Image (cartoon, rainbow, N blue to C red; front, side, top):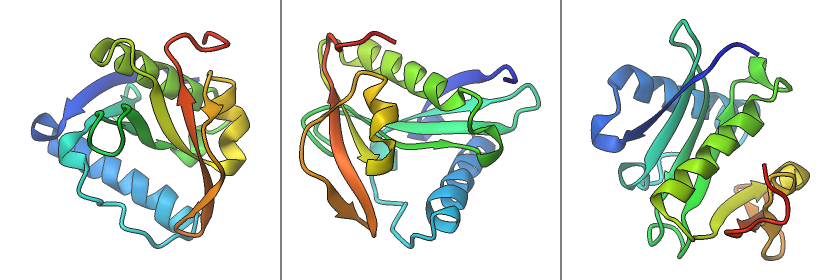
Length: 157
């Protein structure tokens, strides 16, 4: 795997080029690849922290957003988790989540972490200590399930 450089960005300090690359990657995967027309710009981005993973050339390879408690739910949430198609299967998704989980722990010590997982990815999130916390539901034509990672997960990363 190519070395990845991780950086967190609040909305008002997000470099324009990286903001554009992040929104483009989200659109490429969530709208085009998954053939899902949905309002990606849901109004929450300004309240979130954005984790970007870029390679040595400055190309965005992975992204997620950390939604603080009280914005979407009572828990901090990791969402819009995306890895560039060419990087899948390299372990980058697991590394992205590891860095995201650490960011949640630092900012919200003692809080459980929520993910709204596409149901087919439940085993992946389960391997990171997330446990299903409800029944599957449809979100924009794709089956999802809420999952929580408690402070002391059953299995450490």
